Amino acid sequence: MGSASRQGDTLLDRRLDLPQEWVEDDAGAERRRRCGVPGGMTFKTKPTLGWEMMEAVHHSGSWRARWVTCDEAFGRDTSLLDQFDGIGLWYLAEVPHDTHVWRQRPATAVPARSGQGRKPTRTRVLVGESDPEEVVPLAASLPADRWVRRTIKEGRKGPLVARFTAWRVIAVRESLPGPAVWLVLRRHLLTGELQTYLCNAPADTQLAMLVRLGGMRWPIETGLEDGRQYLGMGDYDVRGWRGWHHHLTRGILAHFFLVRVRLRLKQTRRA
Image (cartoon, rainbow, N blue to C red; front, side, top):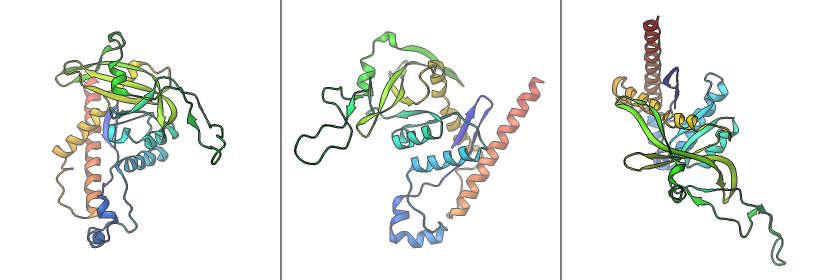
């Protein structure tokens, strides 16, 4: 997990993603013992590990943030997105192309008893209401004037530009209408490649903010790449739980130190 802002970009935390068979198979017990994996360890998905890091930083008060961004491996997990919402964070999450949304909130109710069987207790979408739509056909149905050209950021090889559109839709939660969110679409100028995002920011959020947030994952990815190439974070020869965590922690601290030095040099240059 990392942080990106106008003040600088750095890495904040790490978790070791253990294969499920390592954690749950009895045959792996000796392997876990030799590697020093703590007893009672349970299998956790990447979204769960991501949430644990985010929750720990948020509740510690050590790092202030309003937004969280993530790729579709995390964005497809609607329970994770709702957890972000629950602690007051606004997310811009890339989501898979098979994500479904409603253009307008459908009416719902608990169906009346039909006279047979048990009395219904679960809320359902009323008959006659529209079905949720997949985001890719929905994007294809938009007229050309709904798309605007925007610069995402200034890259090393020049400005990164794409076409964007965004509007309010209703997210799907267990086949029922969920929260009202932004559906943000980004299309590559040359290839036409489409990227799809959901965002829980307020309805008055400007498109310029959503565009800027769409480019904020790149500094984190750059930080991870720099850590692997220049700070040795990818060159560990350890096989133990403690050794891996020590190695990654030192790499994160080294990266943070270099970020601080770079910021001070910029300030000195301006002075």
